[in-house]
Length: 528
Image 1 (cartoon, rainbow, N blue to C red):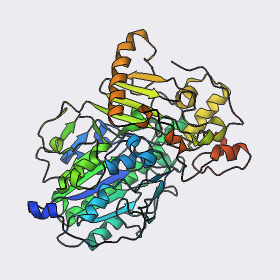
Image 2: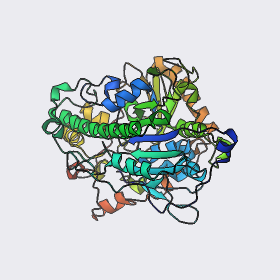
Image 3: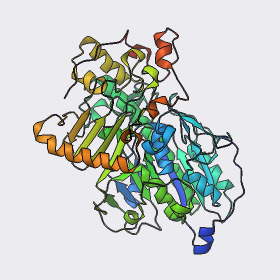
Image 4: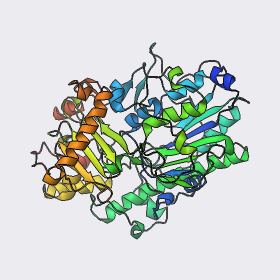
C-alpha cells in the first residue's frame, strides 16, 4: 500500500542558518531521489534486462554502493528511518506501517527549512500514515509539495506526475542565494503494473532475465511480471535523466549533492515487507562533483538508511546536537564520500540491523510480525519473535503483507494444490523462531542453517551481538514491552481481520480477489 506524502500549507520565513553564517561557507544543494519499491536492478549492478543509463552515469561519475540497506522493507517505516536517523524500534508508533508519526520526532527537511533552506518535494514523501504537529496541524515531512505538472505515462498503471517538470518549477521558485533541498519521490515501480507491458511496450524478451530468484518458480507469468516492473524502473530513470539535465542547464550540477536510492525491495512475494537480503538491499548512488574527489569508486561498506539524516545535516553544516532532532544512531557518510579508497573504506562498517513490526493489516487484532536481524558480509541472522503467526499475513484475509501480483497469485495457486510445495512455503509459510543464512552463496535465503549443530556457535555469536545492540537502543522487544507495537491502531484498515471474518468484506485494493483463501488453513510444520 502506498500514498503520496503529507501535504499542507508551507509556512515560515526563511532565515539564514547561524551555522552557515558563522562558517561563511555555502553548503551544497541537496537532491534526494527515492524510487518506490526498486530492488538492486540497474545497469551499474550488472542487470541486463533493466536499462538505467541515468543512474549508471551518476554512479560512474560519483559513487556506487554495493551494500546499502534499509532497516525495514516497507514504505512508511523505511522512510521514517531515512527522515529521523533512527531504527523503527526507536520510533514508537512510526515503527509501524500506516501509522501516526509522533510529533516529538523532528525530521531533517523540517530542520533545513527552519535554517533558511528552500525545501520542496514531488511525488511520494513519507507515508502512508498521518503526520501532525503538536497542535494537530499537518506536517510537511519532506517539503513544499510541487505536484501540478502532468504527463502522459507509458501505461495506465504509471503515475502521470511529471516529476522532472515539477522539479523545474521548484528551481524557478527557489530564492536566489539560498541553499535548496528537493525530495523527488517517484511512485514507480510500486504496483499496479500493466500486465505484459514490459514485452508489448518496452520491447523486452522473457529470455533476457538471467537472475530469477530461486524462491519463485521459473514461469512465464513470473517473467512477465518482472519485465513489467523493469518498464517502471526505466520510466523512473528517464525522469532522473531529465532532472540531471536541468541541473546541467542551470550550471548547478557541480554543487548539488545527489543521492539516488529506493525505499526497499521490489513489490513481489518474499521481498517487500519481509526482512531477507533482497527485502532490505537497495540501490544507492551518490553524485557530488565538488565533494567527491575520486569519482567512479565502488563502495563495499555496509551503510544503512539511518545514516542519511546525519549525512545531510553534516553537509548542511548543522550539528546534530543543535538540530532539535531526537538522538540518531546513524553516522555521516562523509568520510566515505570524501575518501579516495575503493571497496571497504571504513572497517567498522561491517554490518547493518534490519527488522519489522506491523507492515500491514489482516491478522487478528491488527497484529504485526515482529522480526529483528543483523546482516554482515557472511551471514544474515533473523530472530522471529512470534513464529506462530503467518509472516505474510493470514491466508484467509489474502496474505496482505504481500502486494497483489500475478506472481503472488500463481504461487498461491501452487500452494492450494499442494501445501508442501516449496515455492508456497518459501513465500507464505510459517517460519521458525531463528533463521541463519550464509551469504553470499545463499542471498536467496533458502537454506536455513539455524537448526544445524555446526551453526550453533555462529547463531550464538550473532544473537548476542544483535540483542546487545538492540538493548543499547532501548528496543521495547528487549524490555518486555514489544506488544506496544500491536496496540498502535493503524490509520487505514484497522480491524480488517475481524470485519472480514464477520462478512463485512472490507476493501483490500492492494491484493487480488483470488488471493483470499476460502478459510483458515492449518499451520504446517515449521521448515528448519
